[in-house]
Length: 104
Image (cartoon, rainbow, N blue to C red; front, side, top):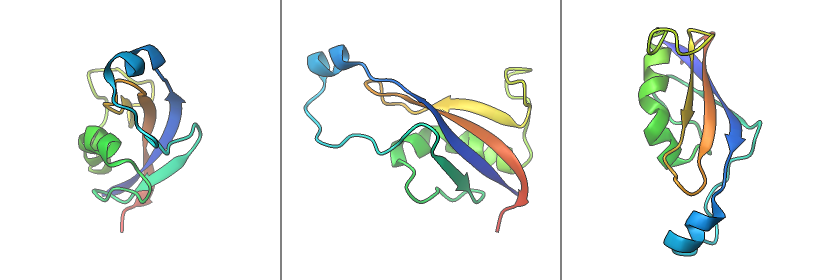
């Protein structure tokens, strides 16, 4: 099983949707563009949002176990995936990449 690097690539925010539908939240997201996490196989990296992990963990697990070429050529790097968290008000896009390093 391999380690998987998870990089925060983009963050979006939809204030119009928040104003219309969301209850006020004082602190909603700790991610920042460029932040890097390394998943040790099936383990959620420290500091990774639980909701984002729930969305990406099936892809992380597949990559860690050698899967590649999701959706028949979707990604230029066959050992990667671009996944977004499921927050419809402030989605974050993550690049997942299989590393050559073995998970512990």
